[in-house]
Each structure stands twice: as structure tokens, then as C-alpha cells.
Length: 404
Image (cartoon, rainbow, N blue to C red; front, side, top):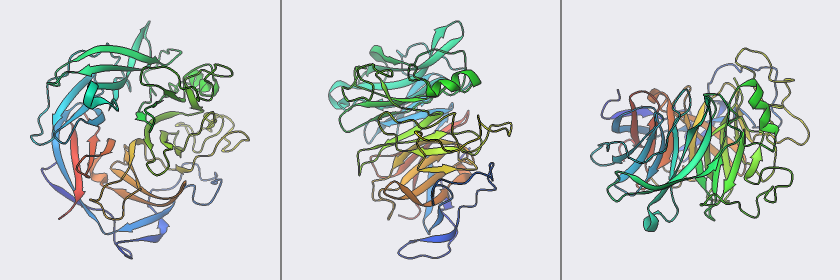
């Protein structure tokens, strides 16, 4: 259990120029799993370690959450948190109290990696009180798939009404792994949904099949209808919901506020986690090309990392960080961090901070590994970072600079 107030150094001091500078070496992360693989361009992996003299304070706000997954701020006082076991809770951000499970959720398959996943507010939540959530939906005969539903949250945060499913991943599969899933709105109120390829050897091949939703990012309107400018909107060549394909298990996504572009981060195999900027209709290679190797130590497919017509990640990790969700930091509580990408890490845990030069990673920093498995990270209305720790006694934790 976390103590009431914990301070951790952000990084060892090497050299400070205006509070931050680059060290000559990358972050210490261990030997690569696939040492014979080489990046496609300079800086695609093992960027210079950032030197930052910030010390962070981690303050537990609410505890006793069972493998919390998704976090959405209702306002300055209240947030919604999903628990993978199939519960949705309202959290009082001042008292740290959890509501009873919110009533009205559909049936959820909470086996393995499945369960209740992400939650986001409708862009017009203030007037319609609608929320959206993704989950593993049972489809019969032991099969399941990732679905997205929406419903109206009561004023007392006790129940959902008018619940309707607006998207179902097809085909269903008998698997308890790789559901994705995160939900992200763009600046025109279109909803991106990230979807896993269900992990098993047979369905993973369908990440390349445009007649399925496995291993895809899809984009839909708030009612589930198809945007006219989706790459396969007319159904010619692929399912109309598909935005990009060739993904493995994308569990993190964020809209870059500087450009309006979607960025995603996905679990690769052993030594192959990827950061991408998915573009309409593009193929991101899984399982034909990938960095890293299978968990057995065998190569994935032919063991190649590049092929014509398949996109390279803008950054990859070997060994992995096992990414959860991520956010572009925009607040003022962490001087010099504006525009940086902050990523939740399940292994080794804590947070990963990246500085960026356009679509290239210029520096990397590991933070708060003492927190263990972190599933979600979000910037709160107060400019602090808020994280969910992934355990049977998970916590909502507020992160601030020490002594501010």
C-alpha cells in the first residue's frame, strides 16, 4: 500500500541547463531482447536520457480499486474510474471516497485481460451527461470482442440509462487476451477506438485483413456512424470504420494538441513496444514486420523489421515498457514539460516521459518506478498528473512536483 505522501527523485543529476539537459547515454533499461536488429533511422530507439532535477510527490487519493483501467474527470471534484472486473466508480477527488458500483452497465466478460476498459465523457457532457466506455463483450459460446457503448449518467452518479452499443469488433473470438482498448476524441468530435488482435497465432494474422476489426484503429461518429472521410468509408477495400491497421495491442492513445494528430502506443512482442502516429489507411506491419521477438525467443514470422508498404514506428522500446495509456502534458505545474508525452508503464512500472522534436523523440526519462504497474495517466483539471496503479488493491494517485 502506498504511504500518504511519497517523494521520489525524477532522475539522477548529471548536468542542468535551465533545469534540463541531455545526458550522453540512453536510459538504463537493460540489454535488448533482439540485439541483432537495427533501427531504421537515428533516434528510433534509446534516445538520450533526460536530466531533470524535479522531485515528484505521489499522493494516494483513493485506494481499494480492483485493477483500475480508465480515468475520466467529470469536473474539479469528481472523476470516473473503471475497474477491469466490470465496475464503474465515481471518485470524490477531495475526500478520496469511492461510490458504490454505478448501475446499468451491460454484461461484461471479465476473464483474463478482458473486462471494463476505458471511459470518456461526451464532448457535450455538460448538457447531455453522456459517457462512452469500451469493454469485452460476451458473444456466446465462449467468444467475445471489444465493444463500445454509451449511456447517460444520473446527476447523483449512481446509474446509467439509455445504454446502447455503438460499435462491435468483428469477428468475435474465443480468447481472453488483447482487447485494446482506449477511446480518444478528435477536435471534430469523432471517436477513435483502439483494438487488439486477440493474441493467438490465428487471429493475429487478421491484423492485416481489412475485412476484420482485429489489430485496427477505428474512427466513428458519436452515434457509431461512419465519417465520410474515413479511408474505406465507401466499403471498397476494407471495413468503413477502419482508420489504420497492422497493430498488435494498442492500449494508449492521445491527440497531439499542437497538430490535432492521433498518436498511439502499443504493446509489441518481447522487445517491440511501438509509438506511432497512425495515418488514414496506413499499414503498421504487425505481424509481418516488428521489432523484438516472440516470448519463446523465436522470431515473429520471418523476423524482419521493415517491408515496403508498411510503416515504421516513430519510436520503439527493446526491452519493453509495457505501455498503458499516455497524455501530452499541457499544464504549468511541471516547468519545461509542456508538449511532452507522458506514458504509463506496466513493466518496469511508473511513468516514461518523452521530449519531442516534431515526430521524433529527442529524449527519454523514467519516473516513479516505485509505483509499480501504472495503467493510466491523465492530466487533471488542476494541472497535476493523475495515475491509476494496476493491482488488486489499485489506487488513484496524484503526482505533483515536490515543494511547489
